[in-house]
Amino acid sequence: MTLQNIGRSVSFAVGRDKPSPAAALLARMGSASRLALSRYGLVAAFLVLWQVSSTHGWVNPAVFPPLNAIASALWKGITGGALVDDIAISLQRSGLAFAAAVVFAIPLGLFMGSIPAVERAIDPILQLFRQTSALALYPVFILLLGLGEASKVFVIFWATIFPLLLSTVGGVKEVDPKLIEMARVYGASRLAIFRRVVLPGAIPSIFVGMRLSATTALLLLIASEMIGANKGIGFQVMNAQYNFQIPLMFAAIVILAALGLIANSAIVLLQRRLCRWSEPVSI
Amino acid sequence: MNLTATRRGEVAIRDLSKSFQISGRRLDVLSQLSLEIRSGECLVIVGASGSGKTTLLRVLAGLETADDGEVLIDGRPVHGVGSERAVIFQEPRLLPWLTVLGNISFGLEVRGEPQAHARETARQYLSLVGLDDFAEAYPRQLSGGMAQRVGIARALAVQPEILLLDEPFGALDAMTKITMQEELSRIWREENVTMVMVTHDIEEAIFLADRVLVLPQVRGGRVKLIDIDLPRPRDRSASAFVRQREVLLREFGLH
Image (cartoon, rainbow over all chains, first blue to last red; front, side, top):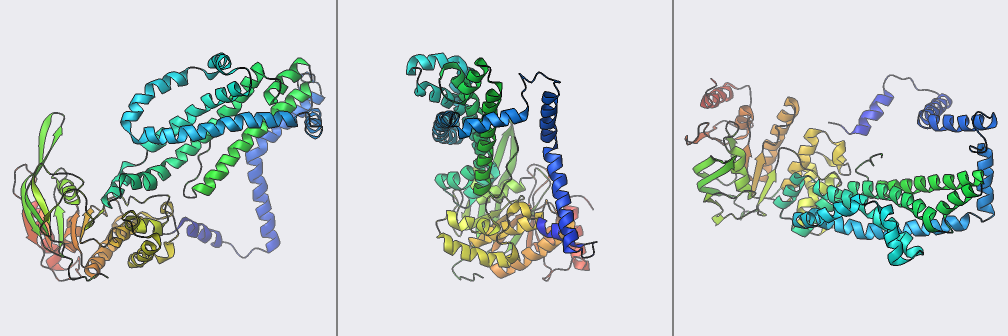
């Protein structure tokens, strides 16, 4: 009958004489660095291996340039402004599409999850659309919307809807019926049950959907920019490769990876703030 | 805490029948059950599994409808859930995204009470179950016994006339269970509420009940009401208690 953190502080206090503050600090730094090593050790090893292989000629440095060459291409691209416009336009495309997907898919998912008849009616067409690759539909969207921004944003939006929609529907349906029954016993109206039980219960799943969708948005962003664009990070990756500016190509790839990581951690941060009661699942 | 004289909490069950269809076969769970539950008494329902004790409780709660017969509370027939009844389930059923205090005031808030006032009432019931220090804790931080205390506080906070308990301590370990039974006995006396409780624990029944309703093991058998005429607070080791236990066990053909 105790809070978890009481248990933790007890185990900390037991069986140890007062350590000097310096020793305690050292011990803490030691355990922190061990933690960092176990978490990021493989990433560091990968980067070191890359650098060493490239400088020693174990791999072809024209294809895998050393990291310092990539870093300087990245630095030049950003400070010189060559990549800044690309980042801006890519962020705009994927951001618009993602925002539209959030606005469209979450309410629809909540509606579908709450009313079985609606889900039954929508699910078959949803599955049909979902299983049709968005990239296969891209030419159709280009025909409909032209080769400009609209078709790019739309194809990203299209692909981004599904993970979010399905996670939202799943989240609503997985809310414990026992909790709903409990609310009913207290006389809660349907609206109150939705607002106070179903919605908060579905939020962790909605966040999982948002993270999957953010990944999808970046994937489709690059694909659409590679097919028909003259600006954007995806375009830069292709363009640099055509012109054999390999360090620049990798610089654009690094930016992509960074965007993905930033988007993911922004969503996780938002989830931590919105639902302190649950831990975000790692995906 | 509430000694309002107008409160009654009397239950009359008239010719109640309920059956379920299970894979095409009709299963009579309750047949022609009639019973009066007195205001402020503690009635404990025991019976073998499948004897319909939980079904009876769920009909009283308004979560199931009877096929036949009726339930009257203070003379008025019951249709669905009602604000004069509160239910405590076997699982605490706390909302994981609300703090302990938020969970206790949940019932009041969905009934339209302003949040500030609901929280104030919730604090009183938090004290009643001895969890003042845990107001801001989240359910995942609580032990099973503590979580069930929160469930009890949430039910009491809406000040029901009738408290319906469905094996509330069934999932707790033996030690916690005894503490909780003593706590519930104290709260029942303080709150002056009618209690109807389902359990499969004979000792729990004798410890808490004014009367024990034994549902028949065989279909169509007769229900039995047994008065538990022991002084309170009850002593589990007293010889009268042990004798009573044997009487009840005999009802189950176990002694």
